[in-house]
Amino acid sequence: MSNASAASNGVDGSTTKVSRFDPTFTDKVIKTTGPKANPRLAQVMPSLLRHLHDFCRENEITVDEYMAAVNMMNEAGRMSDEKRNEGQLVTDILGLESLVDEITYKLADEAGDAPTATAILGPFWRQDAPRRKMGDSIVSGIKDGDHTLMHGRVLDFDTGKPIENAELDIWHTAPNGLYEQQDPEQPDWNLRGRFTTGPDGEYNFYCLRPTSYPIPYDGPAGKLLTLLDRHPMRPAHIHFIVSAPGYKPIVTQVFDRRDKHIEDDSVFAVKDSLVVDFEPKHGDPKAQFDLQYDFKLASFEAAKQRGMKGATEVAP
Ligand code: BEZ
Ligand code: FE
Image (cartoon, rainbow, N blue to C red; front, side, top):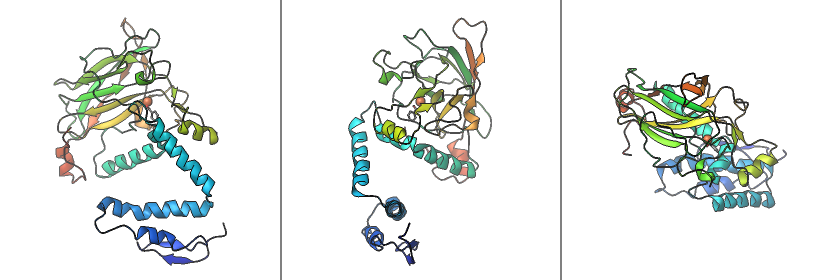
């Protein structure tokens, strides 16, 4: 690029290359933030503006290209409702949700406070899934699929003791690769449920061994994938939100080791410690596979003693 020749000092103390495209413009925009601005925004905006403006200068973005991006954002907004979150999908294929998940987890890890690894929420969680009894199945109205007994314990990260009254909120796709809200053929709330542990911290429920599926690609996220010559597939996984009174909740997923997309998740969410083995199960007429996994939660109390940022319980 021919546009950088000297350096200047910015209002936030940073040094920027002098560009032939209005070199003082970015500082002018940054300076418009007023003294009563939201403190976090006032902190992060100079950096965001520098990166955005530098990206445009370095790549000599034209008005037509800018309008294509604006139209894509607008199309994502128009497609979004309570059943579809296209804006989030676009950020997912860019790795943004997985990156902020990694940053959040790493901060907890550095404070000595990293229980079970986290993974992105994704756009298909639904609030208020039905509460089910331990040992119930979350499968309804589906004949095909490999039925699985998933079981394990929810444990205190520091003491290793079982956690009573922990809630596991679970969701996964049907064998056709669709979540129930995407598929009029599936009963409402199919393959979703909330389970609460007893004093032994144990949980067990029947589900299906999940299959890999494409993220929705009939909108802007799909168009972007095509333009980038990328596929939309996610490796087979089950989603969880695990929470308990007095503990920091975790959002996570477990991934089937044998899935062919385990190494190339279109939204970059796979972590080694979340990769699991579905074992063949014998003697249970309700399941052909068995999956064992323990979840660990960090208590607010322990986090507070470690001086963790954000170590206060937020009312649900
Ligand atoms: C999901 O796993 O449900 C998901 C995550 C990101 C984008 C699309 C789907
Ligand atoms: Fe998913």
